[in-house]
Length: 626
Image (cartoon, rainbow, N blue to C red):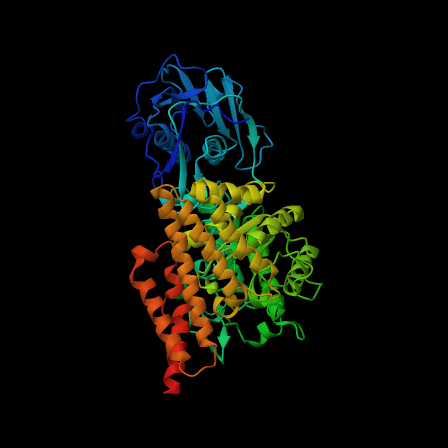
């Protein structure tokens, strides 16, 4: 049941603070907070702009509990102007109480989560003068605070790391009644927004800026070789542990390891063990090699490979043999550990050799990479590239290896144009859940948050609640952010989503190659008309500021597609005009971060990669024709 919200003021949403930095001690949290209205109605936490409840925690609360208390108090203040006081269970409290986290007070009141509650889950219940928010762990209590604010009070964090993208309703009195719920996440691994407190607000299990990961993967999600066997530390004494390339042990720190060297595997496993000793809370200790193709060419490594296999299986046999050796070594000191290993590029498949089984200690993170399609859902039988990806998953399933996904809900080589894949998320994430998979990590940056927030937000919501109605979420998101202009903004997104979903091309990104198949002249014209209509419907400055972000993203997409059309026209003189257009665009995005920050990431316009590389190639082409 939704809460009873008294005296709601229906005005434009105010802007939220960028984040709530947790206080170091409960005394610092208690330093402010007004006196409570002692005779407020049951489970009223704010009465006519005055605090009517006290947040109560156990003595010596953890960093997580302090963050939960600070976040709850900050957003209640933003909603109502009231600053709730904070106390511990030993303090005398008048009026209503918000019992936050496990404590004697919760146990005495019978507010105890079920023993089988999934990690990250929580209960919220109202009774008499108490509102209890209690997780199975303190991170679960954090999730419970976010659930109260989001599901029951309408606070929504849509756009990462920009207060303009947070919606906070206004109300003078906040009364919560009839809430009795137990919530738990659909997936243990919910890694959307790593490094941002936006992820914590949206109940993800990765690390944010203020708290560590609840589903901890160390020393990182991918390419962890360098953290486990640092080249600078080990190469001088053990060059034989590193790849032999062109007859010499490579002096390039990005080289792979020599997978046939058993002492190398023992050293990596020993360092994994040290990580687990230092942090017993690690859920998965991970190994995956460096990026690139600097593989060992020694005769023993090459003897591990299979012939006659496709490119994305060419290094799979040596990789799984090495992963198994790591597990066997780690089991000697940490028999209950769980490992996460990588499947990517030339080792995405398991080996064809079925005599090699995966060690039961292993889970695998499988990349949805360049050989596959991101324009269509993974289980779409009409998509040939994704049919092959499903075959990859089924091959790993035959080994009994738990699976999670390395996804690209930000695909950097799409060049930070809108990446309209919500129609894919709507099918993919429930399908992952149906398969029983662990969850998803996606590449992410807040540097393009206003361009890609639909992907980030919808993915995060589905990973928390796989049964969420995506169409309803999208409608609510547009209406919350854009008010009367919301339906026009929804149409803006609908046009590009339909164009991506119905394209007869199958591609993994590559915006300057495949972008014109999605952002045709007709599609861009329709998008522009919907944005114009949204601007006419906007009825306050906050909405206009948000629309200005979309308009800038749209302008960038128009200019980039104009560049591609000129580049590929074949007409004399168009190449020079294309170069000028691209130079101007890249220079603007690099130099005016106040304007372009949050729209286009710095990664896209860096030197020698992505648009920086495109610019270099175009200059060479124009010089060659002079």
